[in-house]
Image (cartoon, rainbow, N blue to C red; front, side, top):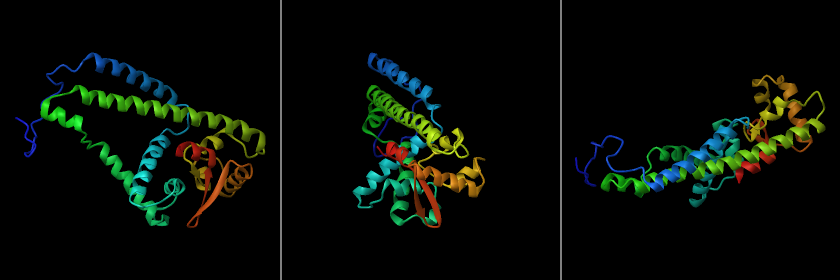
Length: 234
């Protein structure tokens, strides 16, 4: 079935395409993108929670998009939204989080010009190079973010081991602070680190040595891992 821009096009040809796609340029890009992904895969397990990276990227983009429409919110409010109940969010933050969901949907319905050239003219190389470059650049960016988080985690483990009372310090406690930029007493309880009253005291001890900073969101008290938050906000 021939393609016409003003008519539905449901008879997509089967893959692989009948045109040559293993060009010198695409093979070269496959190698570099594969190398970047392999390095990223090896580093991923060195931080406590890898999903924090995805949320960080999406939230930053959502915030930037919202500012264009004069919906101003802060990274603080955005990250707090993941720890607080929806009813406690201000309207601007709710709007930004809707952008987050919209961006996820956008990934599955990308309509960039290279894709139209594939459909209309069977020109595959620009599209393939476009996607491979996106994979490579994202992998490199995420690698650098992981390295920054890992370095910060090691530094925080060493600092808290010396500064916290022995009854408070544990590797599990400090690693929990790197699962998300914000935490609260209930997270410590859920992780089996301490009962609620003791967990609240642990967080106060961490605030006392400058690792955490507390914020009130509705009736909840959240504690921000300040340096992690700064690393994710860049």
